[in-house]
Length: 219
Image (tube, rainbow, N blue to C red; front, side, top):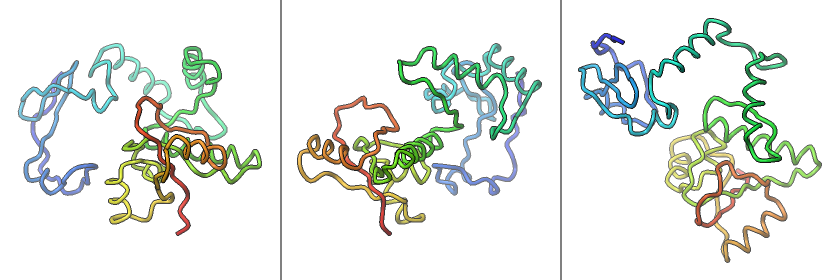
């Protein structure tokens, strides 16, 4: 595969996420192509992709079977509205996924990114309890120093104080405030969960770090 190695002449039009934009545009690092676990920049230097494209290409870049599947999909049906209509592949993939999930995890809702998935999960669980007639369950238990994405919901229940402070100082107020239990975290968390907490953890409980609780802001 050959890709033109010339860099773009204008960089100001694009605002990049999680990037010091002024510094980047003074000394840009531009990737031209990828294959396997390697990138090549516009000057031909090889760079090992140690993060798998931020966990999106764990099977490697430009693998022929994956490229062929993408091409088939684009040439057959590149996009379709998901409201009140669908296509067979959606249901086939969902069925394959639920065939390997534990009992009880038998429904699939596809999203296009992790932040969107967290916001959607929060919407679903709060709506679920509202439909059941218990609209008080608005508090969400999450891990300390956890990361939940960059949407309003993810910022609300994310346990990183740095992200929360940054969001409040530079953006609109996030819709949930965050506080720590004042007494033993296990007892307090259990008490909160029994009264008001929606039983959801947007990421798996895989560490021994304590819980804290996010509750709706009254601002």
